[in-house]
Image (cartoon, rainbow, N blue to C red; front, side):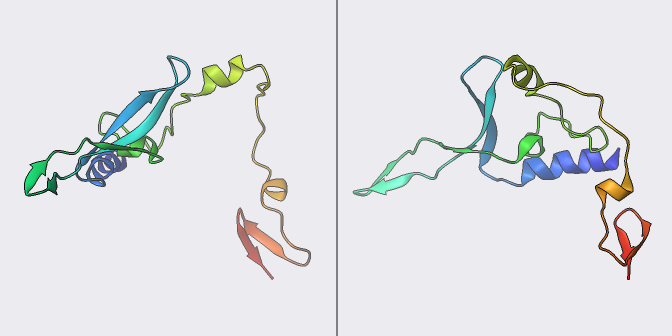
Length: 120
């Protein structure tokens, strides 16, 4: 799929001189995404001193990770599902179908021609 390949390529080129890394969280299956940015050396009293990479929190999701194949039709993997369910404060349900009148309410005096389309 072209959109999958293009998204993966663009995501990995978006941040030059950096790489996506994951830092262990409070449990083994919880990985916190970070971007490790390579820093240029500093000049201290005429001598060049190397700088350690800088890690920052990365909110780009899988799009900035060249190791992750992005499939725009399948969506994101359910990485948090297991530990969210283990908390015991949520419950699952089957969901419901699309109900345009509920999902896309229209102001009084308007006519709907399709989801999101409103005429006055």
